[in-house]
View 1 (tube, rainbow, N blue to C red):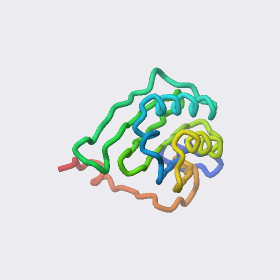
View 2 (cartoon, rainbow, N blue to C red; view 1 turned 30 degrees about the horizontal axis):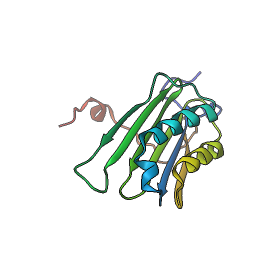
View 3 (cartoon, helix red, strand yellow; view 1 turned 90 degrees about the horizontal axis):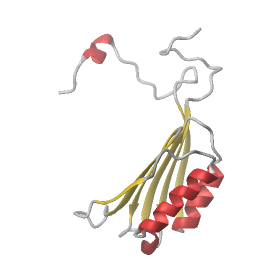
Amino acid sequence: MTTQNETNSARAPWGQHLVLDFNGCPKELLADKENILDWSKELVQAIDMVAYGEPIIEHFATHSHEAAGYTLLQMIETSNVAAHFAENIGQVYIDVFSCKAFDVEVALEICKKYFKPTQANMHNMDRGFHKANQCNVRNFTEEERNERAA
């Protein structure tokens, strides 16, 4: 039996995390609150998730021409969908995290349908400590764990 801090190579990943960065999206699609809300609803259904309540959507960063735009957070029963829409520069940053697996290609197609990017960066990651000898794992000493941030 493994403890919470040990790794079991036979264990499945804790979750799946899709990160999408879109470029070249038409401003009118990113500045349209209803378009963003419709996207959120269709995405959650298409990847077979269950929304937990209504999405939170607010227009932020009006102090910055490049960053200004809507931010959306939709909790789902298995985690969340988060996105920021930089309307003035035609960019979208989307995160879909779930402890239930989902079809990345379906998610990508729904996102493309609503925001019509000319370019995309896509990263799909397994999350958690499910593999032995995972790279990028940092271990902390007892002293480091007991330190408080300054």
